[in-house]
Image (cartoon, rainbow, N blue to C red; front, side, top):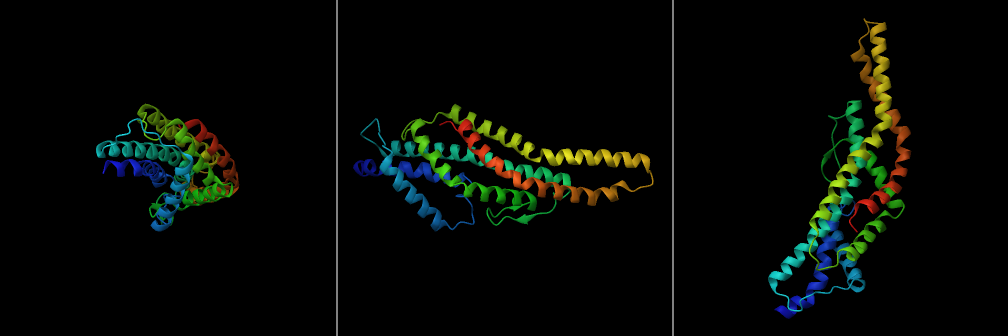
Length: 250
């Protein structure tokens, strides 16, 4: 039994980290992708990394309990790295939701075909545009590079450095909120100007129904600003790689 565990432990450890990473990370973790395709991709990537990543165990005698602990360590690494990527990836959707609340479309919900969750249409549209741009520049190769580099900093079989991983997750959450505000900043500035103009009109023409007039103006201005802004999402794709290099503990 112990001989079988020793022979299978190395590839299973690699499989555990890769599976945990892809379970959380966007694109690969979508519910719209069939489970067979996910399993096939994970096994192929594991097979590739098993030949190039040496797995050295300090103790030659590996018991079943120790094997379970080693696999748990690999799962922690994979989940932490995937969560960091997912948080930064969600900045575009967060920016879209901020804009939607300003426009007044927060109550409009659709079923996201990618994740299978209820979401707002504008945020989903911005995320889809970002994903297409991300994949067009071979962003999926960058995700594979993250896995490869993680074995240089956290070799297979090492004890998880929880403080470092926790710091990376916290910084990724902070980056998500800051980037979301930056993405929605032009629209927020336009709405601030609109509110000032409507306030002046309310003082000049008191009999005007400002609430009735503001609703179509908010929707029209919001959609116009988003139409102008969507092409600039391409700049966030390059910033995404820079954020990952700074935030990932690798």
